Length: 351
Image 1 (spheres, rainbow, N blue to C red):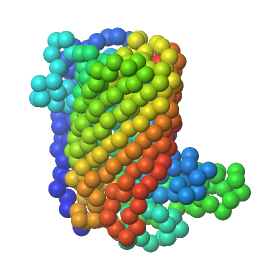
Image 2 (image 1 turned 180 degrees about the vertical axis):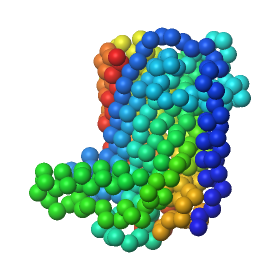
Image 3 (image 1 turned 120 degrees about the vertical axis):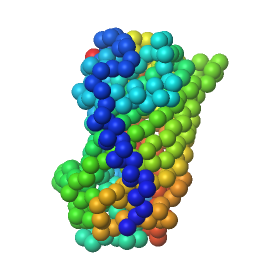
């Protein structure tokens, strides 16, 4: 069995959330702005590149987010935990403004050999998480710096990813007439098969460097998380082209954000980002509380994971698009270790 030290945080986070008060600890900014966003991560976007497209590792992600400056516009109670943590860390005062969001997220991970019905012990296990993430961003100058606290509550090991992946593969085969991609046969071996509650609490800091060139934007980020994924991360994102540097600093690296009235302009830009993560514990590889047919020990996971992303973005008035592709280094240290590539398409609409 894998070491469960990191997984204890899942219990603590669940308890803290359940004890959270329904009364806000800070005054709300009733700005009345709302937006919706969606993002799809998929390695099938790389189908035209056979040497790069491999149906494995982080093979699919789906995200839907709803955001507002009004706390009571959230669909999910739980921002009290984020406010409580910010209060403990002395983040925020009477001049601080807040942005709230709720996201519904599904992430899917598989080994390389989808036809194997038994566990492939020299590869990573099947794993999936279905979760709701509530995020709170605190800022005074949204264009300069911000702090985000996010709380994710969900389940590992539900059959949703198997159903979705199988249906998608069948659609691709019927459309292309190809024998591939194969239907995945090993989902019964996934981490926490049948479902298991889980949680994660994250803290991220963003800072925009003052660059004189109007065509260049640099944003740094760093943070940490505890729960089913425990570790730390840091990175830098560069955008270049036709830019709006008043865009909120936390929205420069991905769609899904927090458009504001000042974003009613136009952008067209390239984006390059590099991030490094330190992995202390990962339930999607090591398992959580349940016994699993295949899970990795602490010595079989990579402690440092690198991500390199390039993309192109476009924003016009109330709509924002971003398409990007990412190379992620291996997160496990077994015979089948390898880097992985996937692409993402995201859209945000201010209502």
